[in-house]
Length: 213
Ligand SMILES: [Zn+2]
Image 1 (cartoon, rainbow, N blue to C red):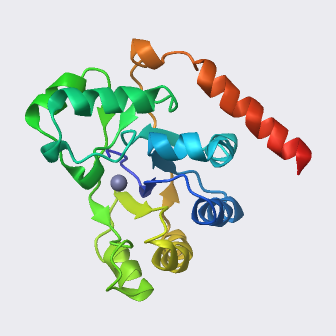
Image 2: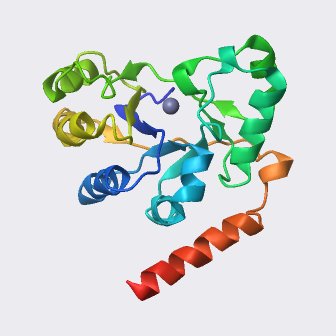
């Protein structure tokens, strides 16, 4: 991302899910940092209260398909309709293809509706064979001004992300970096322009959960 200053963008893929996403939100909140969560639509449906908390804490969200589909292994029609299904629950113009892969035709179909956000630094927190220390190194060895850094709020990543993330943030802060969420200047695609009924229901159900807590 062009910044001209020491700014990086933390991103988290595959949530929202209980425990891990909440723990990440706490880590970010303690340090006053905003980030971007690329959510799986199906997880938003299962865990609306966590999704709402991401929004309430001022973070950005993006579409990561409804069922975490691999573009290269999915027909164009199925891939596009899966993105649209997720868009019923995730009000965003940002899109990140799962696995960082999609077919040219799929790309061309959505490029006018979405900002496709990849990354230049990946922690590999999902890899069970690497340590939190290695995750930390994967980020700090390659980070630069404008970097988009990828972690995961998933069960697979739990141990690595929860240990490496605070260290990464504190190290980068000590090096003079600031953190921003990703924003889109372009208008939302027509079909997700307004929060739809389901989205409003999600917010209502969150209020209920909060009141009963
Ligand atoms: Zn993913």
